[in-house]
Length: 105
Image (tube, rainbow, N blue to C red):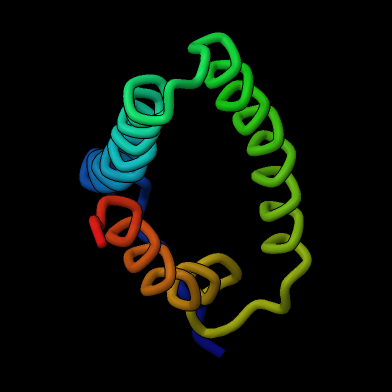
C-alpha cells in the first residue's frame, strides 16, 4: 500500500479560508444592517426591540453553529470529507435565500 501524503497548510490555504469567511460574514452583516434599517425606518419598530431580536438571533446562531459542527464531526467520511457534502447541499438554498432577502415584490 502506498502512503498518501498531504501538503502542508500554507498561506494559499489560509487566504482561501479567509476569503470564504469574509464573503460569508459580509453577506450576514449586510443583511443585518438592511434588516435593522428596514425594521426601524419602514416598520416603525423601536430600535431597542430590533437590536434585542438581532442579538438573540446571534446567541441562537452560536448554538446552532456548534450543533452543525457536531453533525459534521459525526458524519460518515466521504471521498470529499465530512464537511464539503454539507456545503454542496446548502450552497444553492443559501444563495437563493440571500437573494430573496432583497427582492421587492
